[in-house]
Image 1 (cartoon, rainbow, N blue to C red):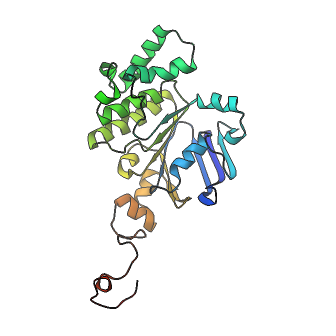
Image 2 (spheres, rainbow, N blue to C red):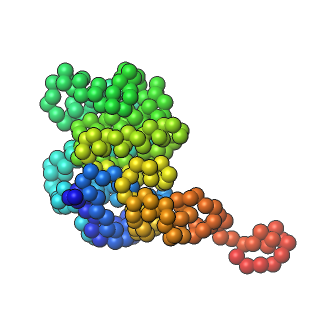
Length: 268
């Protein structure tokens, strides 16, 4: 199976603060792949590098064989039209209806007649179960409904690569299940490739084909969902099963409680 995205020895720093340190990843066409890890480990930065919004300090990011930081501005815009991005919390245009949110990219990036745009928008909204909500504003939608409209907008132009930045954040269990199912179904129906950045382990492991696990800017383990569940790496095991103590301690480092309360003498 052909690789669509290749991340080769990529490092990135904001000024002098390193964020990514020698990352290597390959994402095959047709896969749903997840990048997991704690907040601040570099997941979203990696998405921005893949989308061409940032340039690596070292290494290469290739999408469909093209080095993203080597593209001209026009070439980058052309490549981005083949990508879809679901932002955290959806990021819908608040003064546009659900219909107009989904139609926005079609109107901006194509010369399709309005009659065809209408049919396509209704098909996308139908795919996420919200054709009947086409006239509602984002303020009239529940959190889960708004995320589904954002998902319909993300796939409006049938992208070859779909990127999801924390798609499950703030959703109730039913909405999480619906969004997860839609991510898998839409990827397969469109023949697309998807990257899901998340720290919601259990929901993601139900739908993805492969997982890269990041910590402190490096990939600490990778594998299929079953391999991740069975991992004996202490950090991964603690993260997957939500354990209180492990490599990430429950208590922030400090003086012993007895010393802090003046009951004993001790050391931090």
